[in-house]
Length: 362
Ligand code: SAH
Figure 1: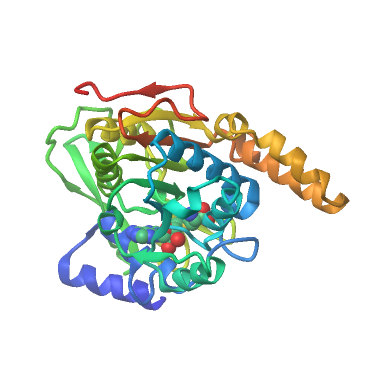
Figure 2: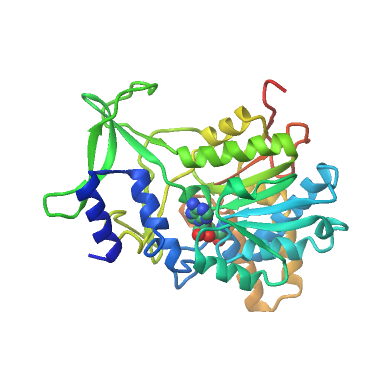
């Protein structure tokens, strides 16, 4: 049993079974043994690969999207360019490189990163040396004045709670101890609260932390100006089901088996995130599939331009990355991943999205 699991077992012995959110928070963020606290998990040698690690084109297009947004904001002379959970700093580096050609953009921006992991902060500092980046522990502390916020695969790492419909009503899914002393899922009566009735066995997820982040950013943008793009995997429409998954070395593993050794994520419910943004006063753009978003921003043209100055091996890599970013189904990220943006309600529709909704009270 690894050190973190032994500690979680002790916590359960002292305090009783843990909500799934508490388990996720410990597995990912325990100061000494948490998954993100101890390692750089990305790439072929690591546990998973993200879009910015697949291709520079991803960050370059998001950079041009951000520059367009800045112009739509009236090109403010100062704003914060914020990234939530920047991983290796690759996305921000590509954003900054691609926007060097935009007059006034670099003079106006300051780079702000929200990151809890000391290992990844060090990696980001290396990748972004010279960018003058400032690090923050929380989303609340990063918001100050007009902002452009980028978040790729950030919301999926935020802890959520799970409820299961039983013959006796809604129960909360908890992490406790099995008869063998190992971690095991169990159920405890939860009270039905405002939850609708559903067939026995239905799993309902409550992503409170992600909803708070989205609503907090939406409220800020609707007062101070700016916009935010959230890219993640999850459905456009809300549904039921257990989406907690653990990944190690590019394969799914049991989420309770080795806390701190595997990445734990959940699917992002974009319908609820969008509603939270609208309710907090922001305009909602999308969600769109990653495929539609990137193609609308000119991914194909970007791949063509890059391949002109590439050798044969590089050209192959460019088009493999292109396919992986937009291919639907299991093969790629094209329709599993969605992009949703929030902005100040007075801003026009933003590039990459067909759907644009403004909050009702405005
Ligand atoms: N955006 C990057 C990394 C995604 S992985 C990419 O696309 O490659 C998730 C990132 O969020 C990591 O940098 C992780 O350390 C960070 N993270 C996870 N939970 C966090 C939290 N609660 N607060 C701040 N950062 C967090």
